[in-house]
Image (cartoon, rainbow, N blue to C red; front, side, top):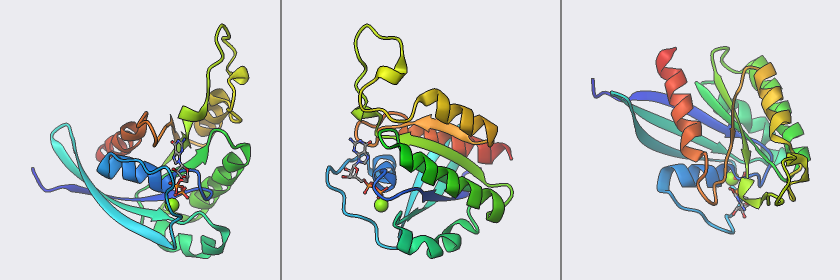
Length: 182
Ligand code: GDP
Ligand code: MG
């Protein structure tokens, strides 16, 4: 069956965490160092083969700024999937991500698949001869802390770099798998 399975997906998260960059990496395999902020929201589509199916992602990339918050329900209301993004080098961005998750779990489609993505892992420098991740320089959100939160709230969890490409395809592939088995 070659008719694509459509997945409506929305990106949410604080401004400048890299939402648009993740989409640009997924759709065009590109990265822009000084990406201009999104106004309102941007719409993109991307097809993706998964096993014997074709998935067509219909992606709403929202603006993170507080002044656009009231528009968000228009984008998540009919969404089957949401990617809530934070920046691993900015602890406050995880708090903002948690408030989006809370809003989605209260107000979005009850079957929505939510993925939490900790972006900008390329900015984390592992310190040699240390096993302790809390000593990685640049990191403000430990992987284990975010993962534990994601498990508690039933979210898929990823760490990504839109800049280098790490983890980006996995976010969309796992969401696609989840939507196929539902
Ligand atoms: P948005 O407001 O969440 O859509 O964030 P943008 O995609 O516009 O990115 C904000 C800034 O962070 C831009 O200057 C990007 O180049 C930068 N950025 C985005 N993703 C990454 C990443 O994975 N690593 C690094 N180092 N910078 C990133
Ligand atoms: Mg943006």
